[in-house]
Image 1 (cartoon, helix red, strand yellow):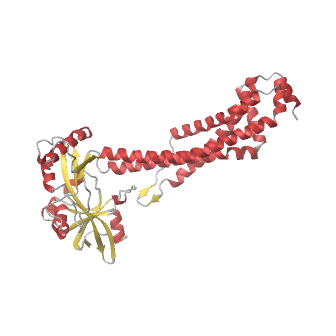
Image 2: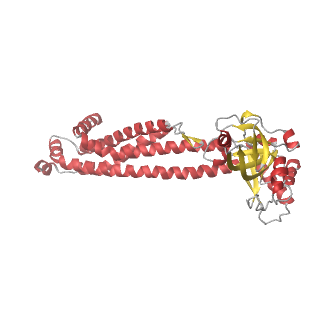
Length: 411
């Protein structure tokens, strides 16, 4: 009996029991559709997160205080200062460093008319745009003149602009930032992503932050929370990182063997950590769908065992007229594989419809993306067929092992 004849015979058997076949493949349908949808969704989310971080600078290095205490009215310990940033920018050691841009950040109330919100207030120099992508959708970015005169100007993150102004144009309007009146000079482009602060903040000149905002607190000197650094190219990141650590350890008089009082993180490390977290979450989601596949496989095995019992006499007749052991084995294996493959195809169709429906949907600041690539399709179908073959192996072996004489006597 050829493979094609086994396929035809298996199809006739399955089609003759449409209701039972449909219920049997239901577990496979649910499992495949769940796994494919969740993996596609996870892969799309991973790409979204990667894009968000890459917008923060592919060659970027961030130096932060080892103790990230708040710098609000309560006061906090700040190990980094403007002098550190100036030293990094001018040191003969930091040959792999292209741009150094210090950042101060606190949280405060921002208001316009009757609308107000508590958001992140960031102070930065104009060169921060060379390290972190800050595309302006309307207006302009802060410039050297703003920084030199500590101007009362502010850029709004997309979400902050929407919260305060709605559909109104915020350009040249005056808002209050931590109680101080400032003119809106620009609105930043929406970045989206799962990071809440990606669009929820205001940006002012660092000199304004230190002279107007931080001056009202009990924080002394010219502290900064972060120093953003750009290496000349991705290949220089490791070198730049080591040079930055060397300079700061010298400035902070840290002895050999003592821990740093600052943290140095590059964007590759941040991206890799985030991708690892998302990857683990994606595996967990796929495992949930795999449970349905397991249940579906058990269902196929159960039905195939029932089918062997029901067709015992048929198997005896076929053996009596010359069917070989492998013919019986092949027929039942093909039948179980066809059950699972059919369930896999239906599951893929459902998953495809699901991914098309959710792609482009806005979830807060994130736009859902669920690409269903060809490798996911191939793997899903292969898994479905494997589950069918594994589930049908024992019933097929049992059918092939039946004694033809005893089978003919079966009622």
